[in-house]
Length: 113
Length: 115
Image 1 (tube, helix red, strand yellow):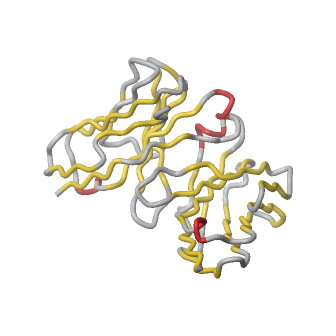
Image 2 (spheres, one colour; image 1 turned 30 degrees about the vertical axis):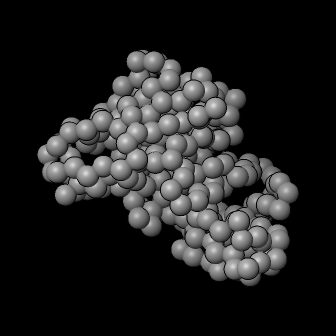
């Protein structure tokens, strides 16, 4: 039973357009959410995070939204070819978040020049 | 600054063989983790450690063992390799400050195939 789901295995976007990656979760105990980015043959790297009490967090071209029940999304504007990677959504019950991460299956983003 | 280093990067094992995946970090992080990633699936936690001498099971610990004799090193041992252990293994670490944000620092991964 996957508690964190990324229902789109892949997404293709034109350079300069917006990329929207979605994440759904079932466990109501989760109250901290993160996105990790992974290039081939590399480990995941932390991208951005948000707590359940906030509805938006921005970091440059990356914005995570938490406006719907048990759903969050990562927006990349504008998308660049270097953003092509696998993006993992992760969730945690909060305290000592790093010890309790549950990951989704990932979405492969392809940004076409 | 090397970060988290894993060895080997690739390994093929026969069923029943044993091996150790090595992980070392040079960031003086107290917290270390082993994850596995199967195709199309998210990362699943195998074991973690909150400091030297302390380890605990994660979501999928069966078939694995760990030890943490130093802050820097966190080896993962497979005693009797099975095809179900074919996966990519990631070691990660975190500091106390980063832990509360869930930010982990990952190694490049070790791809293990059991035939």
